[in-house]
Picture: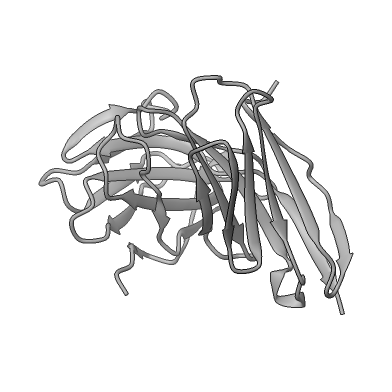
Length: 110
Length: 117
């Protein structure tokens, strides 16, 4: 079992819809949680981070963390074709190390 | 805006040859990471530096890979000899905070795409 699990997708949503991306992790000692967006052939770009249980909103993005369930999610509201990318979940420990999932590919159809 | 620099962007080499990648982190960032990303997978940590010291190289294939960050600023990752299975994207990232502190968001450079023939 991988330390960080994501549905590989592809996830397809129509333009303007809400995209929901999910991630589970196995290390209960994990303290920091990150979402990266990666366009094809490009490097990952940090879009959200969350450290406490609950929701964190930044523009059209909302990260949700539930440490008891070892679950973190990313919601993208009003999805745009430019949001089409692979979304990587990363989970960090207090050693400064982050473990990445294999990503979920999102396609937003006009 | 400060960025992580990497070179070269692309490298094609033949198996058994030596290759080297360079990374310059964001100024002032204490922690530097080298990752390998195979197509369709997430980045896999190869080595993590705190200033000039290696703090995690458990996944670095030490028989052929080496990494250094001599002055605690820029870093070089070397592969010798390269094998076909080394074809991947090599990513460098840096974070401001040292290990042990929550909140060390990592910022990635553009990566080096390595093709081994």
